[in-house]
Image (cartoon, rainbow, N blue to C red; front, top):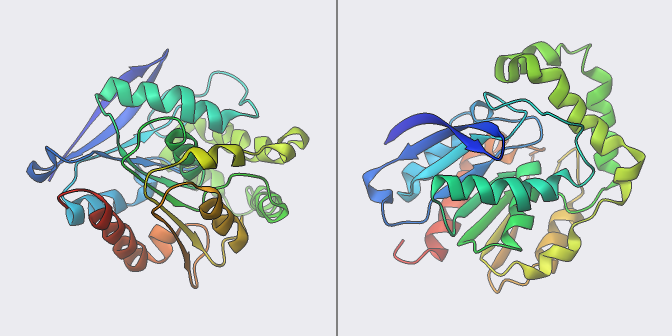
Amino acid sequence: MQIHYSKIQVHDKQLYIQHIEQSSGKDKPTIVFLHEGLGCIDLWKGFPQKVLEATGHNGIVFDRQGYGKSDPLSETRPMDYLQQEALHWLPTTLDALGIKNPIIIGHSDGGTIGLVYASHYPTHLLITEAAHIYVEEVTLEGIEAVKGIFDARNMAKRLEKYHGDKTLTIFGAWADTWLHPDFKDWNVSQYMKDITCPTLVIQGKQDEYATDAHAETIVELISSDTKEVLLVEDCKHSPHLEAKDVVLDAMVGFIKANITNE
């Protein structure tokens, strides 16, 4: 397995890309990992490499605009930022990388982006963790709680390790957008019917930002003939870190069962 990094131009911004390659991945769909609302390449903590090693695929992990080593946000985040990421930024990023018909694994915001993308573009297979398609009260309560302890818990200093001087901007963009009164009506449920690829929806049963019903609703609305939900016991918002072995086994098994010649 070889890992190297690059920066590519997407629209008018430079995005930082991690390329993970192995000889067995040449003729297989590329797996694209989409990070959470405060995440980046490094905050996956090496989990993508484990998935790729177990499946033999090549993979791409990247920092979206505003995160990690990519260019900072240049304007106030719009209320439809997740749709813009899915339908404007992600397709252009994949085109620049020469990736068509990917496998997508997305966490939280990345899971939502993956769902909306897969409803519009050819996608071999989709796996989401802790994705949202509408706003629940528990989501707002969870974000309010994090915002309330942000300074007291020294979260800014810990996040600066990953986002540098973009930390306060990206935290505000995440928390203030979700807590904005106009965001309460945000909903992408209408796109789910257009998802036809095999889809695995994963969520921790103790997720502090969503109810079990949220994951079950996503699966119910998706049109794919192959769709599953996995509610992980004793797990909160980051299943791939909190229940690594369970989630790794589930993802690898789902990929191998649904990709030709696996």
